[in-house]
Length: 233
Image (tube, rainbow, N blue to C red):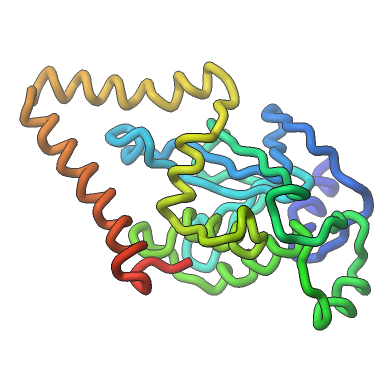
């Protein structure tokens, strides 16, 4: 069993796909094929619940997320179980090869790459993973949203143009909750912290909370749309 798990975690870098993958979502096994996934962040999500950690999943459902300097985590979502997800129809919404990478072997991938016009889903994710394994992590300039946006642009998802802001909005507006329990777990800390803040700080707490949220939003809006080299993708 352990050997199977270990080989599964090496699958991204080795490219050893052998069979087509099911598109069924299985939260109990953390399998979300062709999905963008979200989980709340400790402390930050307690204060601003729409802030969270994001990742993107391979065709076999394994989660990839940019978790730290030069490190893309595979099959272990860094901040706990997935709370929200958005499954992408890769055949209709992406400008990638219609053939699953499950049908390709290593030799075909290596021989065909120089003349390939479009990548498969997993090949696009592989390229982004290799790129971000040489990136420094910074919460404000190069984070998990940057990684997902980079992947979506390589996939040609809805014609590209993805950045940290519209990735966050996409999940906020279109993401589905894994379960009612996931919704409860995500918002309970915010409710508790806000209740304590109002009890001991009153309107002063609300003022500083609103100021903190506004500063975060302004930073990413300015860094994305006004100073385009400030936030890396």
